[in-house]
Image 1 (cartoon, rainbow, N blue to C red):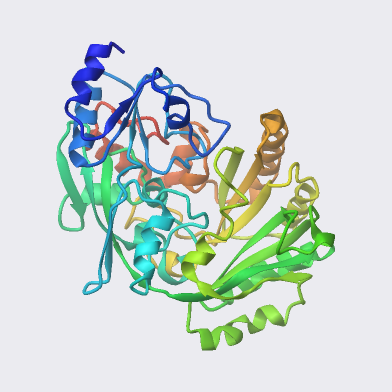
Image 2 (image 1 turned 30 degrees about the vertical axis):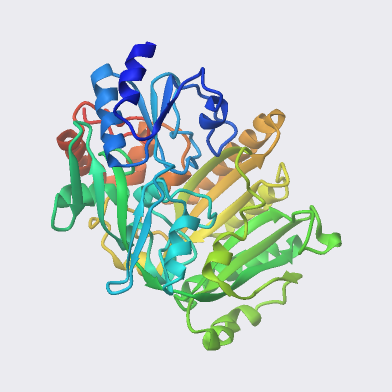
Length: 457
């Protein structure tokens, strides 16, 4: 990209332009997934909406490929591109809580930690994910499942409006009253329709939670998973628990005899009145005492950051997912087989509940379609060493292929790699055609295509 062209762009920005010649380029081009190694021609670090509009207009005029980066956690690496321009929103971290309306306005560069640190001060929380360093933008636009999902729905279910810059540079607001078709599409349709610069969320009353992991020996895994499939959907909606196969991290708070041991577990989060926690947990206590337990009262923000240190930026990640309505015995047998083969210390399988409040919204009310699912399954091969990429990728693909026949057919869009058009169609089912129509209206030339792409043609 000619230097004089970039100089002209820089003159219209409050933020900065980073090129391969810049000292910060190697750090700036990296995303959370260390497996992604792409080299854009330039990275624009935006500090406000004017910067975003300037970057979008510049890229359109120069006919550049554009990648949008919020938190950079997208597993497929869509927050960066080879050649072209990265529009980096990470400096845009403003958060404003309005306690009179219990709403939270957050800019698109915020992480979950940024968002809920501000909300927690007012006794509120926004339902988001389980790693606090994840950006809210991609998470919300794809869904946003996490500890509060059964009680309060997903992040997108608590989205009241969003501000966007469209491919033609226009600045618009999307809500049930303004551009309602666009608002429908961005709630699950990802970044296909415009670049969101800020989100207005409904804040949910959450302060302290009773939460933490329980781990069992693998000899009890079949029994635990059979109990979980029946018991978990019947638990109070304030009580959320995701199931996991894992290797125990080698350090505190885990006892030394469990270090690196393959185990099964459930990470619990109860967001109801603390004096009712033991009553809510009674069915869990009646099942079987865990080998290890670390539950207790804690701020919601502490729960959200509980696993951040285990999964820092830069690890190699490969993941595949599916929505699940049932966990038959035949599926459990496949789970047990691949759980015994966990290829690395950080590789895992999670079953995230997506029932409760999620299921009470019609599947045509938002672009997110799988309101009939009970769990969102994700299989992740993770390791810090690039030498182990083939090992973690092969295990993940084989595990997924064995479980896919027991799924609903599509996946949570935030748990997908670059898997092709058929998988995208399976993810949106009968909402897909409407998404194509809205794409044609707001982005007819597919300017925003570095994503799980809904093509306008």
